Length: 369
Image 1 (cartoon, one colour):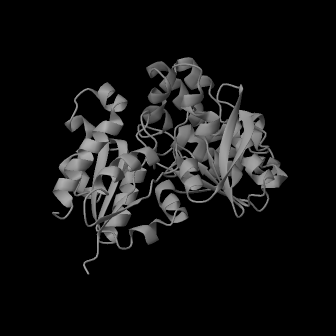
Image 2: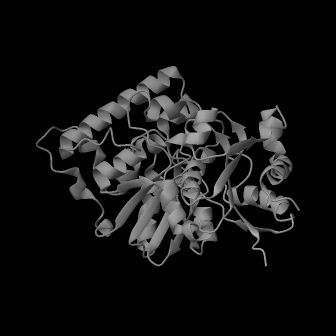
Image 3: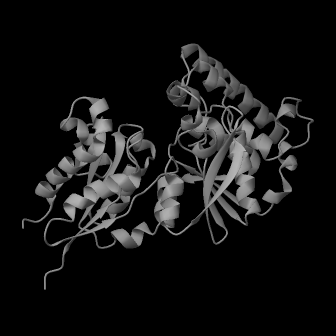
């Protein structure tokens, strides 16, 4: 008896359009209709938005708590908890989607990560001894100062010179013995042309003048932290994630920073799922050079390709060159903009267009009926 042709559909979200599970559902519906094909749906995340959803789909239970939002008002944030491990999503406490309107220079300057620190402590209060912080989708560029203040660090005293006590001594005692892990979806440093302000602040409403001011603030923050601790983490890959939250948590809260895609694949058992796959379909809303810096689909593609599977991608838009597509471990990319040139239509009708794209994948890669 011939074994079925096995396909794993493992996309990330299409930001602003469909969740990862919705993307997977649209593609799976088409591929599973072909005879002799077995399809496994396995939505993924890389530490950004959707990370908690993926953890919940893998058997974690939800816990919802009130925390401080990016501009100071209270918001409800949900984290995932299982067997002493919590997965929290900084976007649920300090995300762009929590702003009352469109981001602008005022919100880009004022947005705080304070609620992220509260969310970490809430997870610990619920019994977590390991807290994984997904750090994508932020509205903030505060270097993690807000989160650290919530965790007990006396941020205001950091510029008092070399004789000040180590600020890490003020960390909330509830964090003692807790493994704090930053699941990072990019590898940018804190400062410079590839840093938090230059690359990501414009997406958070910052104009050029605000970007320059944020860069100066982050540089001053990094100098103060280095003077207080004797260690300088500003060049650490991922330090610039989520407006520098990665930097702050590593430098002052004892966190360790790991690639989010690899961590989430491990948590969700991806190795077992992909072990016998013939074809793997990955995806996200925009495949571009940022995708090559650690985003989920490329991490999934490389992991699957290393196990001998053919890997193709679906995307809202594709900005990768042919060599970059190959570098990412992909055999082909199928973009919604190949079918519909208007991005607004692609976002509005993403589910329908994904069905059409999946038909193309089926024709190109599945065995003939």
